[in-house]
Length: 149
Image (cartoon, rainbow, N blue to C red):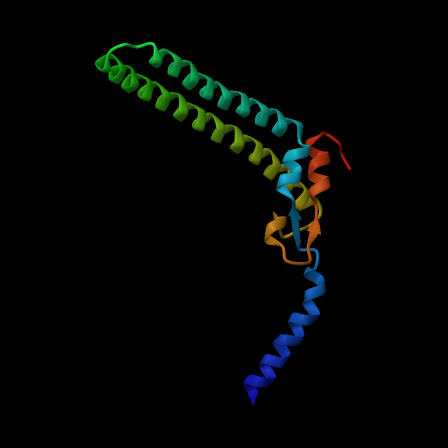
């Protein structure tokens, strides 16, 4: 009987405390932030251009390959290009990851500032929210654009 009363009391406390924590969770639509953040759009264009450079490199080397006349020379060329391409691809991936981390860090730091200002307990991506919480997406976008609201 005591366990039932304890459960009832704890349930009542949880129900009464729930409204106090209703605004404790903030969320952002990270994809929307990226599509409205000029630095992120600039990085995306830069990465696309670098990706196209890699493709162009392969197309140019394919033309060279076709002009080679002996199988031994072709194999040596293939080996050389495979090593060069691997190095270029690894450099591109490292560069891309650094740029993506840089953008993510800027968005995250901005969200942290807004979280403190709004007195939120946490900020998550909109995909993690089933219902409730406070959408701070537009505030984050404005701050990244330099608009203080």
